[in-house]
Amino acid sequence: MAARKTAKPAKKAVARKRQTVGESIIQGLNDAIAWTRGESTNARVTLVHIPEIDVRKVRTKMGLSQSEFATKFGLPPATLRNWEQGRSRPDAPTRVLLAVIAKHPEAVEDVLRRAS
Image: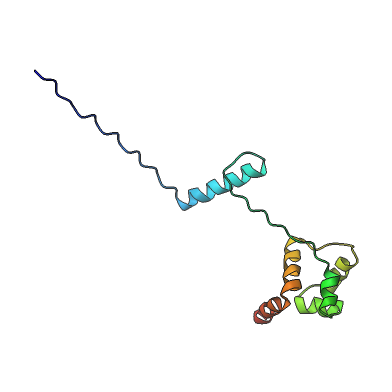
């Protein structure tokens, strides 16, 4: 009798379980924690350079006094004086705002005007 060839059973496709939104967020947080510890991860990291801003230069270029500049952009006048005199320096988010003021003061003025 001739031997019959039998078909091999097909391998079952293993369905990958799709990650839920919650699981994805948790995985991202775990990756971020691992990255801060210096561990190798698949985390995508974007580093942004936040510029140092010469506040006095920006203000004088605009032709404003300290009190005018502070009032126009919602800054405490004493804080502005401290920055200009080197007693303190703006934090990162404030340096971003000052960089925008330096390049596009009208945009900041417009946003502040609409907000009030």
